[in-house]
Length: 268
Image (cartoon, rainbow, N blue to C red; front, top):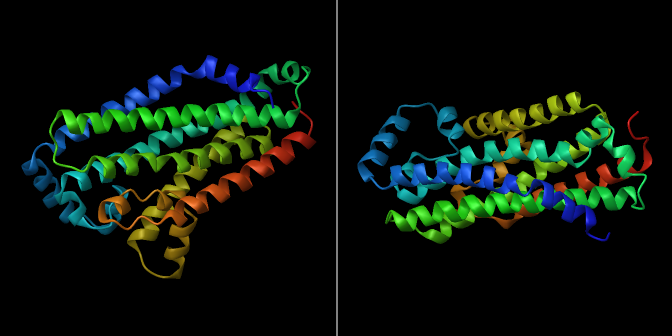
């Protein structure tokens, strides 16, 4: 590993940090603006009270009380929406690691250069992991800056930590997409499988959190959305084990991707 592929990835794709980071940052500013008015927050809280638990969970909240404070409102709404947008980015990034170049035939040229397959895959993954980190940091800083600039009465550290906690989930989706692209070989099939992974995970989290029973608990456990859990920072119940579980899943998924990519034919 010499960093050439990482540098090239950042040089050609760094603008994604601006596009995605600024876009999510604008969303954060909009939510900050709503949080300026306690009356508006109270009105939304009354609206959510009339909704079934599944609908409440779809907004990333397990308790209606979260919508009664500025920090609860910002974290609950922003984190749940940003998690979906970042999943879209992660799928695109995972495809860019190998699938897109393999589909276009560029991979054949790249692998004819004096670089091993394992080094290439690792550096591409690191490059897009850094881009994802830049996106999360930028949207987090913009959202926190909005809180400060609008004089919203909310703890800055809670908001910042809850948004940064989106990063492990972003890496997980990117790694799963990379794994699916390596295993399935066809870009279109990998896109469908990755999208299904995100959608099913989201539905499992909503259903699992709003229902009861062993099956519901299992559905929530296997959904990566349940490990984002931004509200845990608001109520002071964050468990680092959730992040460790995602990290282990990321390492495991990347290890399988690496093994498969190194051993199989390219472009077949």
